[in-house]
Image (cartoon, rainbow, N blue to C red; front, side):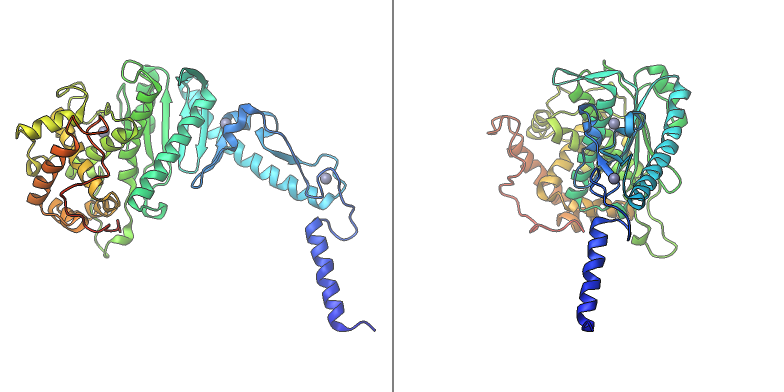
Length: 426
Ligand SMILES: [Zn+2]
Ligand SMILES: [Zn+2]
Ligand SMILES: [Zn+2]
């Protein structure tokens, strides 16, 4: 008679053997798929971007991949599998992916039909990009539609991850975690698509802030006179996306019953200086330039001085001609002048240099309709007067043309300024 313990051990061992191999009792093993039901398929270079991912994102669907052989997947069910049960499981998984892909593709291809144009559609964890510009030039290399859609989806995911990490924001604190970008080759397509997808018409970029009952959408026309190069277009996306990100940051759990805080259009109306200042800050962070003035912002064609905003602000501070902080902070974004756009960027630049993580808390406080005075005090430990003095001092040294890095100083160094000891963003 077998000792009971040995029988149990043998049983466990047998169970392990079955689960490792995957087949059911009595079934043969399959050498082709190593009894997994799936065979590895080499992915062509053309679909490399479909298998790219980051720590916070992955590619969920792609129109071109769905229409390619084997959906451009890196596996397929083992065709002549010797192990029926594992093959069946793999086939079920494949069929579910195919069904979900077809449903998604049907919805996306309705955009092609509406605008009578062939698009590449790519959905990643936080973005849906619908793109019909045949090709763009990136670092003097031609990038075709499908790769361009993936490239911009990836760039946006990277920006999204950076925005959330800097400000300590998590997906659960956003009203929407998906942002839709339509990128159109022709102006007439943008004029047609704007009202349908973003509820606005304009020949440039139109946006709809995400909210409880509406998606976060940007409809763009690839206007080469406005954004000549890939960097210019990328910078424009960054500016637009930051408006979309700050809009959706709103969690009903912050409020007591009966309260709801700031309503759409969110920062735009009451905190225009933060709304525009942050969007410009991320542009500047990208390549030291600001070139986007949204359609609702003041006269988009107006300019104040040259393109070097650091120099402009430094000169104004040295000449004691700075814009009035208490006056400008009461303005909605569309009321900001070209000159004020540069000042709001610089004010945000100063706060970001003092403590970038505090901006997350500041954004939360705007949604709770706190005054700018309270926001400065609680997030950065400064008074309104202290802010103006501290900012002017900082500008005079940080943006000075003689600064060592040639672009107005290193933003990580804050000489002669008290710090608030690494205050956390939340
Ligand atoms: Zn793809
Ligand atoms: Zn097999
Ligand atoms: Zn803007």
